[in-house]
Length: 408
Ligand code: SF4
Image (cartoon, rainbow, N blue to C red; front, side, top):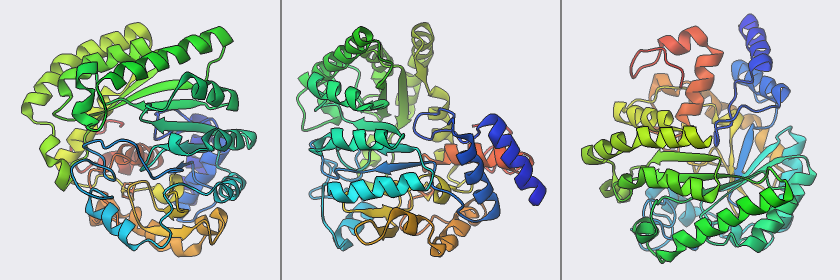
């Protein structure tokens, strides 16, 4: 075991295996990665997480059909059982994070060694009135900062302020490829919103060019369902028009309310026809995309098994607007509240060990963690990558879906 740890740490330093789970980039902070890896292998938490998602605003101005929290498919907050039960039982109902809570959280987080923070989650982060200050504070602490947004509030003025504050990445959830169909998924929005967003993002591209800025980089994200599967190629064309450097495609999560939006055989045929064109245009324009991961996620979900241990307990906790820290962005297992305890005390609390121990056996027990939906979870691809790296022989042999040795 000791040799395995040492060799894994060395490999981690050399190769930087722990990929950023949002964007697929290799992180540069090798020492921090090595400590995370040593923690995973020894069953202890030795350092801060790789990255944290903060839902600085749980409120949203959209009602996207596939959203777990604000879907148009159901009256009231919390579109699925996990979300509904959590919101009904929580003590603090704040829908927007108190800035003082954020301030002490981000300082405490940085002390643990973490450098990646992403404003994303169950609401629209740009609804937080002090979002620019929140970005600037994290940048002052030498962190890499992402925002995931629906893009509706990204005016040129706000983008300029965010760029000046040092924002590294903007991830716009577009979920559409044509202006006449924007409201298919974003049901409370006018179709004209699509053109406004693309126009504003093109403004950002020109602004960065004029100012000689590389950041904020832009990614366009698309949840693909049977309402928009015919627009995969147009989504890539929209990325070209907006000046995006990356485009992500993700199959819709299926739960009770979204089952009717699942990708069927016809959708898959349409996608197969478009993805070669998507790949060619991406290559020609130097845009990063993730078609392989799209298929692997679908394949994994179809297989029905949990193919990997989960390392979320070392890698990526989630923080809600009321200060609740949960095990991951899907889980609603609350580890502690930032209004009551510092992030460090929550993160290094030995009581987390039992859950972490269950998480690393998940592929053997085939049991989801409490208040989580682990089967089909998108983070499985990142987990598998680490699993196969840290346990090269076992990880590849044990792939329960296909038995093959492909790297994810
Ligand atoms: S596998 Fe479960 S615990 Fe791990 S990230 Fe996914 S939902 Fe969270």
